[in-house]
Image (cartoon, rainbow, N blue to C red):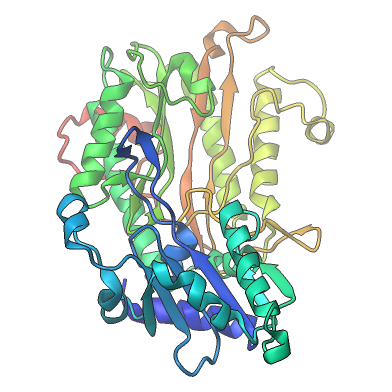
Length: 441
């Protein structure tokens, strides 16, 4: 990602908020795992989106039309002693030279300089309520300005949650972002194909999880976008199953929900397939029902259609199918209104996708589901989860199926970013009988 892209994002934000405003965006902090060991650091998505600056303990400030520069960055200065232990820091000079800040200062000067940056601004945009310490800091800076009103200082009196503006901007992806999301989907798709080819009775869920992470890492996506779900048999009926410690059994299905993160952007793909490479008649029947629901939902993901239409399309197909299978009885419309399908399909059909796997952006505007627009990226992921229930036919019990793809809304329709992973049952079986793990799908 070049500084040109970050400058474009900054200009868009500053144009939206207008003059007499100031934007305050904190970086993520390091988190302790245990004693003096930290969790792997991941930058806060909002901060990364606007700056690309990868270090913790930093704060970005944006002031539209400020003569001395609109982008001010506070960060850790260079420190040879600490860098010996923790790695090279970017420092004040690097913040300007490499990350396009107009001015940069050490964090030690934050409390001194922030009141001067706020002075004269009527509105303060920052992530209100996300961090009690930051809330307290901002109010402290404002009090310092108010204490000088008799000398001509002007304190802000309007405080606006930054999320309401920035997250709407993040919702529509640029060409640069789409290219990264497309590549993240390709990497994850190859890893899913590899897991299909490696799978066999007796292998562990953990082995497939490790294989996914390895395949993505060597392709340049070191970290997963979220904890991988590998659920065999009844474990697939647990929506957020992450124990991944069971042995996969002959005759079962395995559900794998796994995505990688590439340059700060997520992929999110789910496939369900037979451990032994062959669907049983009952498994295929249920699987094809979920696939029909997913295809109907993808067809409904069109520009101008509203957010809920893909979900409604999937629910209608699933409800009709459950009636045909004898699992539900009654009229389709009545069953949908009563949400009779919910014991077997209890989640929504998708979510926004971007820097966060459950990405930012409102799903409703003015009390109505929002229309889909070109540049939006979402998942489509219907499923069926049939527990060990005596009311169900025995061949349907302990089966969990979900099929998930990453969808880009385009001007003329949509693009399935994760289409490289097969999902038709015949195509899955064909891939699983080809055991060369180097084959790309």
